[in-house]
Image (cartoon, rainbow, N blue to C red; front, side, top):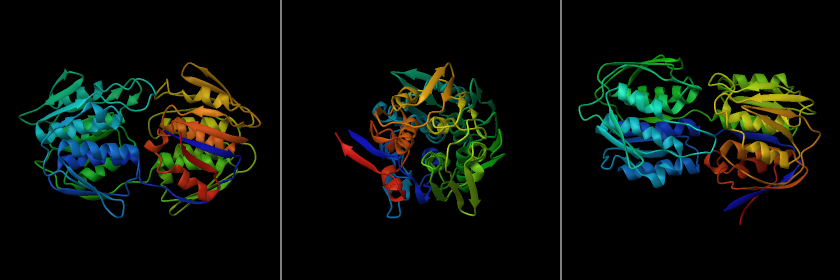
Length: 422
């Protein structure tokens, strides 16, 4: 198992290109199941979650290869085993995205209940309800979800709102299934995240007829078949936000290229309000800061609100603020496993139900800590860059799920991160 040893404090200065979006790549890779023939997905990051998705597609019968430029070619001409096995699906929640495409194209799908990060309860009942409204018959069998529609799916009016807002993966699943359903489908309370818009744009490039992209109401006119596609995915807004915080917490200056700041307006606004300079340019932005940030009150919301996937990173930054901050989590109320680990580094954080009170301290101090999930591990890396001494972060396999060799990205701009096998 690998660990990080991170020496701090450091100052990050230089340029980083933002990679393609993991959260866009995974459903788009699943979408290739809808079209017989080879599709090529460009700018896919080299992550453990992507590797799991490639393995899953191979198990379904697809031919998958990584090209010399890092693109992934997926030939879904033959799907002879429409089953998502437990040993693969348990490792990544986004595996559930194969359910909609498989039942739409093959008339049957069997997918194990998904796994993923330990950030709280994330049921898939809305996914299943949406598929049932499209005409699929659903039952559970030996821990697997079995969806059947031997006569094909039929368009319907579907409401996807849940207790904590719209469901991103649920929207992806229903949207993909609806492209091959007979007739018209209206998806109300659809997720508006840029990754869903990217999926819809990719599906349209494959021959789907989707309108309302980027809005909470998606309209889909079913087609008989989709065609293979060559498609470049959008930049990763969560990686961009993480590196923005990296510049601020180390009192440095980073120029981020291939960065869509229009997808990060809530984040950019928050950074500016606490004193961080964010200057946008044609290909991204430059983020710079020195001194102590101002405190802030942050509440996470579905897009276009403040993203839950950047909550932990901003908690690390506000731990060094000049005053008290409050962070309220309204997407995954239990997503606070990083609080205890940051407190080991001399942060002053107090959890109060779905909120954390952050009392700013003068400095963070290195300590051995343990990553509990993908974004928590990123936050610990950021805290370690600013802390005095050498921090050891255990279980860094979490960070490899969403950040491509983060040490190789940050070391050239001033970080001192060593990966070791223990």
